[in-house]
Amino acid sequence: MITLTAVLLAGGESQRMGRDKATIELGGRPLWERQLELLRAVRPEKIFVSARSAPGWLPNDVELLVDDPPSRGPLSGLTKGLAAMRTTHLLALAVDMPVMTADELCSLWERATTGCGVVPTIAERAEPLAAIYPVEAATDFQAALAGQDFSLQLVVRKLAAAVKVKLWPVPDVRTSLYQSVNEPSDFKTGRF
Image (cartoon, rainbow, N blue to C red):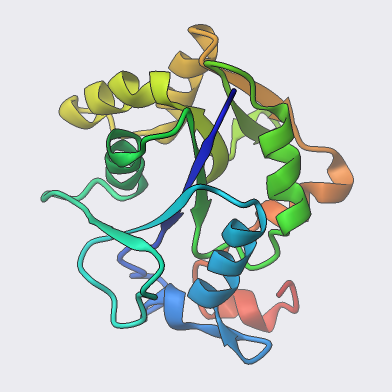
């Protein structure tokens, strides 16, 4: 039997955006609220929020995971989430993917198997911030965090080579779900 924990990755510095992305409102709702709703729809046993410090918006029904300094962005959050979970798999979702759907996350979860997660790919580039990792990946993330190269692309390639994750090519009609917002102009283009 495979079981699931989820982590909302909300620890970015948002330098290009100029403000905390988690609190940006789309459709009258902050991104953090929308993303937590998506994670709840997948029905994980527990939900974590990974951040650099305690956000003022943290709901009571989630557990905070604070990055150990120095933070290495999502690598730190994923490493901490894998170490803290008590399930077989971890569903990761970035706070800044406003087009993602619960159906897409459920589809990823359906593709996971014992000891193996799922990382979507678009044009052969991994999308590690909307993916599922098995508990067996914890040591790989810890090793990456202790090393000199903090690239999630490299971690995912190593996990795929070790058959700890399956790389799943996202169909063209669904690639927009994986878009993230990085700067104010992203909202002016009409993409979101």
